[in-house]
Length: 482
Image 1: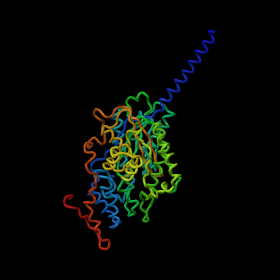
Image 2 (image 1 turned 120 degrees about the horizontal axis):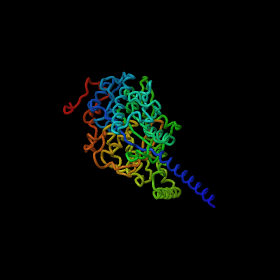
Image 3 (image 1 turned 90 degrees about the vertical axis):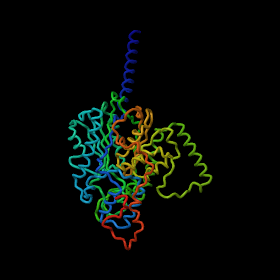
Image 4 (image 1 turned 90 degrees about the horizontal axis):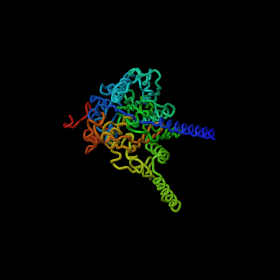
């Protein structure tokens, strides 16, 4: 009897140990954001409306119709006068970029952001176990991760990933890579560096679909420190709840709507097609179908299913009501209330149309999309790093409370839509905030008006006659802007 009792006790102990090990191992697979830092270029790289006019005037490939097109594009872009451009633009060399221009732009970014991030957390570069770098439009030898490792003298056994050509959604792809590594390697520290190199990719031709990129994209970048160390959980800011990636590369329309190519004169540029809104809408809808059940309460899902069921019955009874001919790319309301599971919406600043489309589709308020709209206005579209500027705005405005959930949505060439949800782990609304890219100006946002003064300065172009128009030596700018 005693022997059976002993065997039973051993079995129970062994089973308890296994259960504890299983629970313990799952804890190490969580992905936390320890800290992040956005890059603020120096003020001598700030692009005012006046300087934008000078850049456009320098391009001898443009005529009156292109000027009018740019006038309309810039005014409707949602971008203000304090965004940043690469240095070669200020030196008037945008038509003759060098490899060193791109590398120098990246060095300025990572020396600033990574240095500040590690110093603030009092972490040595040698403590970083994983490095993921995403810069879509610049490749070099040695690679950008190698340059970062050399600058900070990181360990020789560091795990390195270098992502190129992944577009504006690469930031969440980088996080996904880290998340999957964390599943197999416990007690690790990861660094994600996300930026874009504009220096060798400034378009100087006259193709309207390529000129648009110059109106939207601006310099920026971010560094994010992630970990699965339980010892650092109390210091962490956010915990990753779920991440969903949608890729429509197999669809020709989606694949070709956002692509790097050459124009008829052989000038390389970034082509943004007219079917881009339609591709973005399709990718967003498919992404939401997957992530919605992961983040919304059952009651909201049941309400939506019931509403959808009733709608289908009505359509069968009266098919003509369901056949609305909407223009291609028209945003479609999701019909589901994401606010039942989400407090904050961190939207990629792809452009005013992108933000407006998501606001309509998810039925969001102006307050919900204010962080994205203000980020677009202040920093422009900084590609994959834009999400972190939006998050920084929320933090600087002291909106983020413990337990809140932040929904990140990004789009990118391919065509891709990636999204994720973060849970706020500690109250970020009280006390002195950390060094934040918004701290110097957050009290000025949102401004009373975000209208671009380009119309007032260059509206005279609309009255010019194509038959008699001649490119002036200098643009006629009103006296108050001189």
